[in-house]
Amino acid sequence: MSIAPSWDRLAAAETHRLGEVSAANVGDALQRMTVMDGGIRLFTKRAVMLGNALTVDVRSGDNLAIHRALDEARPGDVLVVNGQGDMTRALVGDLIGEIMVNAGVVGAVVDGAVRDVQALSEMGLAVYARAVTPAGPFKYGPGAIGAPVAVGGVAVAAGDVLVGDTDGVVVVPRHRVSEVVNAVDGIGEKEEALRRRILAARSDHAAAAR
View 1 (cartoon, rainbow, N blue to C red):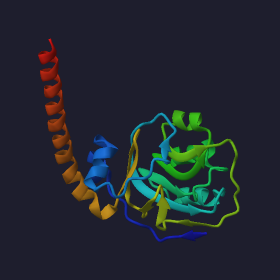
View 2: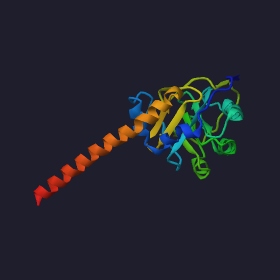
View 3: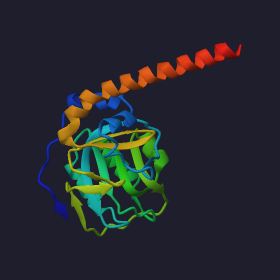
């Protein structure tokens, strides 16, 4: 089991604005370059996720490293697991969910499968994955904790910021958080101005048809 030295996390005050806007706007601020692919989907009821990445690399179908990774967790973390895209064995279920809640972990993004989604929902966790299956995992290892991983077609480093909603997940590289926070309001304002023009045109067309 490989465990990286401790890594920096950003304080909630530095990232909270990203949780107030859509994942789409955050992705737009990053030129759509760090948006996870559409195979990574939300399976729980909680529709907003924001936190610092706790990265885990595992062998297909094996979650031993995930259990060990949660010993390194801090409140506000998001578990980010490269499960090699394997959808035959669930890497996260209700027991890991209970540990996540105890550690203050707010959600998980798994490039693989999960299970017990009803229970995970009731715990208030935001859980994204490629699939759901009742089949449980192996626990032999190996694994790496705190190393960069590839999840949903995007590279994620420990301490990067994850933003998720019903559309999916965006990775904000830690060194770009301030840049993105400063950009999202302008993106929202441009979209709102365009929306007003579209609605005004619709009203004009409706009036002309009377």
